[in-house]
Image 1: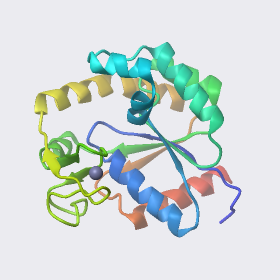
Image 2: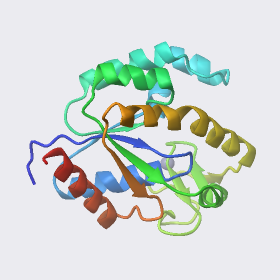
Image 3: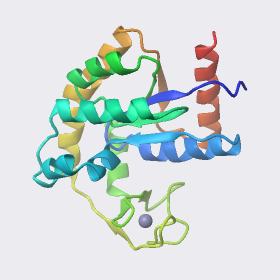
Length: 214
Ligand SMILES: [Zn+2]
């Protein structure tokens, strides 16, 4: 594999599609190849920026201009491989990305809604570091109820109404924004959300690099 290749991935999929799990495995695969990938995550950005925190604490949506200016700075500062998670979420943000960086390839996780709701019911979260796990299956923590990353206690938080609402917002705002980017020439790979193991991800990486160099 050519070491000069920059993977700039725009990771998207409805809430619960498995973005976190995908990125975790993506990091492992690249790490095995002695490579790294910078994760630019909307959640971290909210945590880092005092103004964003104010909006989030009040439960208000972040204004597009604020989100765009923060992501613009972050993207301009970050070299090499990037996994972009949680941006763009709206049409205006997608339009801004066209102006910031058009080298992204979209990785869209396809999954049906029943699967998502079932996963949400099985989800446990670490309140200290934000890592998420599943009670059962491959994404379960090594020790039941304990965070692999920081050793804190895991808690279960199910709020189906909130998830339904987030899925609706994703369908109304984010999906059309991503669709717009594909119309503008961004290549989109559709990933099967039920198969996001390391060997699947290796295959997606190879397909993406193959496309970038075709
Ligand atoms: Zn933790």
